[in-house]
Amino acid sequence: AQKVTQAQTEISVVEKEDVTLDCVYETRDTTYYLFWYKQPPSGELVFLIRRNSFDEQNEISGRYSWNFQKSTSSFNFTITASQVVDSAVYFCALSEAGGNTGKLIFGQGTTLQVKP
Amino acid sequence: KAGVTQTPRYLIKTRGQQVTLSCSPISGHRSVSWYQQTPGQGLQFLFEYFSETQRNKGNFPGRFSGRQFSNSRSEMNVSTLELGDSALYLCASSLVPPTYNEQFFGPGTRLTVL
Image (cartoon, rainbow over the protein chains, first blue to last red):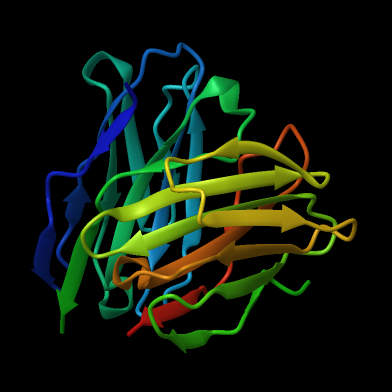
C-alpha cells in the first residue's frame, strides 16, 4: 500500500540555521511522483517541487534543496540559512499510477518554526 | 493569471444540514481535485474530476459528492453533515498531461459543523 511518512511532527530552529525535513514513502509502483508543498498560516498549499521516480538527481533552488534516494525510499528537503518566512507546515506527497492521476497521498506534515 | 478560487471561505452549519462548496480552477486547467484536511486525519483525497467525469474517488462515504461543469468549475456537496465533517476543504487544479499532476491549490473553505 502507498504511504508517506514524515516522522518529524514539529521542528524549531533559530534563523540562519539549516534544517532538513525528512520524508519516507512506500509504493509498489515503479513509476511515481514525489512532491513537497508548503502550507503557510493562510492555509493555501504552495507547490515547491515535483520529482519523478526515474530522476534521482538532487535539486537546488535558491535556499531549498532536495535529496531523492530510491534505495532508502526517501525524499528529504533541506532549507539552508532558514528565515522567519519559512515558518509553515511542510507536506511531502506521493502520486502513483504513472503520475496520471490527481490523487496525492500526503504525509502528516512537519511544522517548522523559525525563530528570529 | 488568477489562481484557484474557492467560495465561500468560511461556513458554519449545523448537524444534519447539507452544504455545497465551489471551486474555480486556474484558467485553462481542466482537472480539479478535492481534499479534506483535519488535525486528526491530515490531508485526504476526496475525488478528482477531469472533463466533467469523476476519475478517482477517495474513501469517503456517499454523503460526499461532487461534480464538474463544462467550464471546469467544480462543486462538492456534503449531505447530512456530521460534527466530524468540520475541516478545511481544499480544491486543486491542474493542466492536462504531461503536467497533469502538478496541482495548484486554492485557499480552502473552512467548514465548521455545530
